[in-house]
Image (cartoon, rainbow, N blue to C red):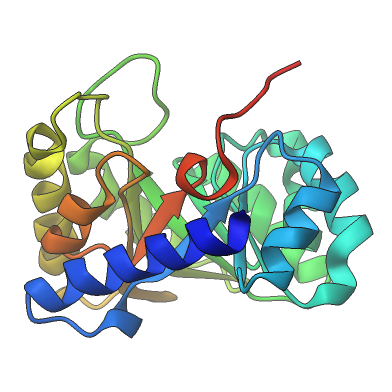
Length: 230
């Protein structure tokens, strides 16, 4: 049952936060609902999920249109193409995966059309893996400065995905590096930026991410069960 799984995850989040002297409400759960049908997502919302994470625009549009009246917050956590930005701005409260001035500029333009301040995170690729999107750590500060002039964007923090490890402790250095980067950048005032969020940690390593400072953990399988791709 989704409700039981959700409670187990919430208990683990709270325990992980308290173990490092943080409050349980300092970490928010993003329930990753990609590939899950709308009715299963509805069940999750009714069980208490308040934030949904989606990776694919077309799939998210269909679910959002079916479920928008339930009041959940929608976050985009996948790679966003510029030509899909207008849909992302319409649907999502927070876009986790901005990694270029080009994409930020398009998002800003679409947000201006809707008289919206679009909140975003900057995606950082700390592992240097070619299969992952994101900026290098050295590229973040220049992008923050460039985005500072865009009046319909608010930068809320950083996001990363470490390499996959069987042992979650091996992901710890990547989480700690992102946290340190956020702290360092946060000491340099930047227009349209409030670097309070760290989106990092998934089903296999979220407790380690919380210990390193995560404020948003992206968990799907532990809530919805194994995914069944078409």
